[in-house]
Image (cartoon, rainbow, N blue to C red; front, side, top):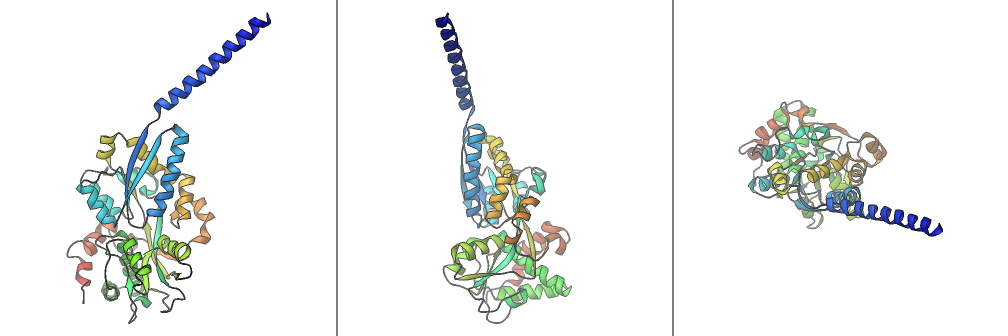
Length: 342
């Protein structure tokens, strides 16, 4: 009798173990390996390094999928042009919507891409601030100080860099709202660019000119880039100056449809971008001094972000980004007219 009971229990345990083993095999058999390419703008390297590692860990635990995310970084408009020219991105993570619109105009992104994800497909925002030498020797406090004689301003090229387009429009918006005159705004921005000795193609290149080559008195860049430098790279060398007002910078994302269809990576690409809205993703975003969309997480980190009046592109240019691109940044537009090398 005891032998019979022992054998019965043994058989049940064996079948139970076999079932678990079969389930394990089934789970792993359904797991996949993916490699995604995220084509992004110039100053997002540190952010996506952390996002990629967190998403890979999350996906492995969730489904067993092994995901490797490769990165490409440069000025956002250069990146958009590269994707249009054939760079096989699974996703793009840009710093303004016009670059994704250009990609969409070629049929590479869904025309309704803004509706694909929450918040018009922009998981975080930033703004333009000033980075100065330690102690602020030129006493730069607001936009008007940038155009004082002798002050050398560093920023990238608005024709190739979304970071620089935001800086340009922040300056335009400041002058326009102060004077109420587009002519005065044009004069202010024209004077500002007379203070710029050279235009880099992307935001990180401008940063390198300022911090490594010791060029200029003030760097105009995204808030996250300024605080990265001041807090992590040179607390003893640089200070961040918050102007009285600046522009709100949305950072949108999109899936490159023909590429994910070709590679069979559509679901994982969408999951990767959706991860940016998870609590984990939003916390990483806040850690890197971008402003998360989740109001609770933003409130949790409120003390880490500059307090200033923000305006949008729509607030200063009727028609928003489409008109801003046509009027200011298209070939022959206002930027081409005002920026002339001495």
